[in-house]
Length: 290
Image 1 (spheres, helix red, strand yellow):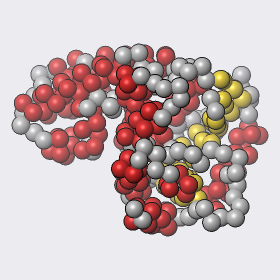
Image 2 (tube, helix red, strand yellow; image 1 turned 120 degrees about the horizontal axis):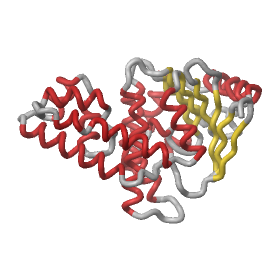
Image 3 (cartoon, one colour; image 1 turned 60 degrees about the vertical axis):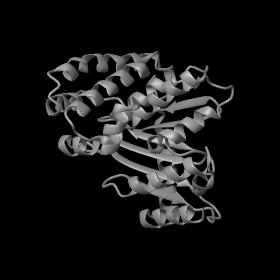
C-alpha cells in the first residue's frame, strides 16, 4: 500500500536461496573458461579486449558472478565460440528471474529496488555493506550463521549475494555512497586474512570514479546514526524509500515522513563522518597496524 511501511519476519528462506541456479552459473563459467583457454587468451587479456574488469572476468568463470547478456555476446565473438555463449544468454536471464521469484517478500522488494535504483545510500554499523563485501567475507558471514548452514547452501547463497555486485560494474553508475562505522573496519570477521583482503577491497573501491565511501570514526562523541544501520534507495521516477534490517526483522519503508527523517539523518551522518581521503587514510592505517 502506498505511503505505508512493510514489516516482514525472516522465516529462514532468504534472498540467497538460489534453487540450483549457482550450479548453472558455475557451468556457464566453465564454458567461458574453456573457450578462453582454447583461444590462448588470459583473463587479463580478455578483460582488456572486452572492456570489463579482470576481477569480473575471473568471478564469472568461477561461477560466483552472474554473466550479463551483453558480456556473453561480446565474449562469444572475442573467443570465436560460434554462438555457444549467446545460446545460453536466454537461460541466464531465466535463471535470474527464478532467483528473484524465490526471494521472500522483504528481500525481493529490496533487491528489485536496489537493482534499479538511481541512488543508493547505506549506513553500516555491524558488517560491511553488502555491495562492498568480498567473496571470502560473505562466506565467513554465512559460516558463522546460527543455526549452521550446509556447505551446499553456503555456496549457493554466496553466489547469489555476489550477483548483487553487478551494480558496481554498470555505466553509468547509480549515485552510491556509504558511511561505515570504524568498528566495522576493526572487527576481523573471518580472520585477519579475510579482513585484510576486505579492507584492501575498500581501498580499491574508494579509488573508483563515482562511488563515495566515508568512515564514521570512533572518537565522535555523538552522531546521528545511533539508531543503527539503514539504507536509502531512489527508484527512477519515484520517491525515495528506506530499508532497515535487524535480528530477522526487516522493514521496507515508503512512508514519506519517515523516509524524509531517514534522509535527514543520513545527511547528518555524512557531514559528521570523515571525508573520502581521510577515510581511505584511516583504512590504510588500520591495515598497517597488523
